[in-house]
Image 1: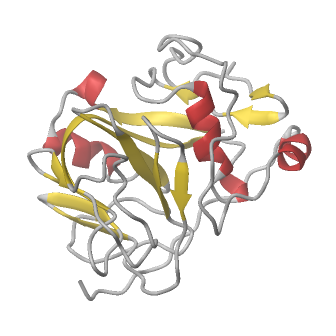
Image 2: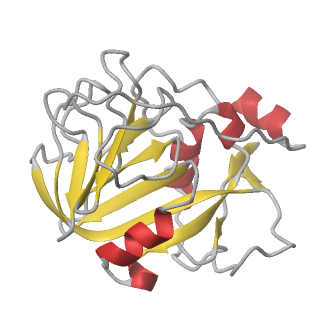
Length: 239
């Protein structure tokens, strides 16, 4: 790949809980991070994430002073509370106090490539989370909407991460290239140079490998390159 990225930025936000949240969180950017969630906490899939629409009574919730992103518009079938905290802690500071609006969920919409692209065309910055048929979870934070024009877009604030079944690890931009986000009518990917950090095609088959963009290894704890998508969720930020 040899296209260059274009810039996009996320709107800033403020919250009364920000001061406490930032004191409690260590800066996870520029390194791989271990899980900061509480090992003993467990979450049912229908815990508090069943709020539908842009409900006016959605309130900030916190755990140990850290903002816990609520999932608005449905419930996540992939991420627990601890895992959402881990992802949020690796986001740019201006995104950490937002809740997550679930824009596309294979659980609700089915595994439809057309519907996925239609739903995520105008999200702005977003989080993509993928669960494979073998139960492994990976994803990325994307600094702008997915544009299916075959050119790399995004900024150096993009990150990719791997999750279960092992420890959470987050990979930041290395500065070696600008291959952040790539999409066309038949695929979507993050990273490049050597290999995609992850790539998914229109049949929901994917690959993951070592990318120069993020300096990551395979995002599957098994170390495999190929995978089949079982679940995919895309969320944007809603305060």
